[in-house]
Image (cartoon, rainbow, N blue to C red; front, side):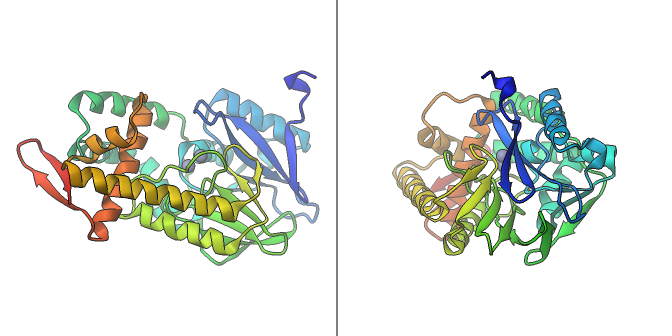
Length: 333
Ligand SMILES: [Zn+2]
Ligand SMILES: [Zn+2]
């Protein structure tokens, strides 16, 4: 059997199907969900992938397997604003008039970021520079950000969803959850009777979802994420549909505990390193991610280190001082 004979869609539950859409990132694919309900409810896409020709082809193939085209999509629910989940939102909206929906928190922060991008990019880069990113890396990081921006088509209008409200998918009720950390307004959809969670990147089976502090994020993303892990542990879903390395994972409760332990280890590491030798978050990130990384890998490493350092600072376990001569923040015990 060749790859082209492989089924395009994986059934998830009822009329809900998962599509593995290629993305030019290390995870290789992102999960896009398609629902064509039998009861006449809206044809729905959950997440839209990045705007590349390969992703558009894969989504068209998935739609066609359900007897649909782009113009039939009536609703697009987006788990969070990251380019690999949100990139085609504006294209889906333009081709079908679909109602694009996100959690209210995410519209006000992440989604708006794409519209105000030209204003926000300098602030984003300054934030990285203030935390120690060397001047020579700033330009390549700006260029890398621009490449990512080119693959995002923001929606003209986004309808807010609120935590606790119900949406109907595959003829069932799903409760809207707020799962912040990986993104400020990360949304989950929870079907209690089936014990199933649509999780996006809030939890992933093989990699630790990046938890990063950027110029435009809430002040303590790691604190948010540790609370989200507690929420997931208490919810104890039988299955979760995940954004990468899925489409479906089990053992969410154990994975949530494992990820919490992982972040606690990193907190201990940062606290010890900054205590031993006061340093910028960038220099701490070189110690925590002590390997060769490309420019976007370095950005994630810095943002992730910063999320840990700031969490410790907000807990009163670490301090930071502005160093005038180098123009950067230094973390110390
Ligand atoms: Zn993401
Ligand atoms: Zn993702």
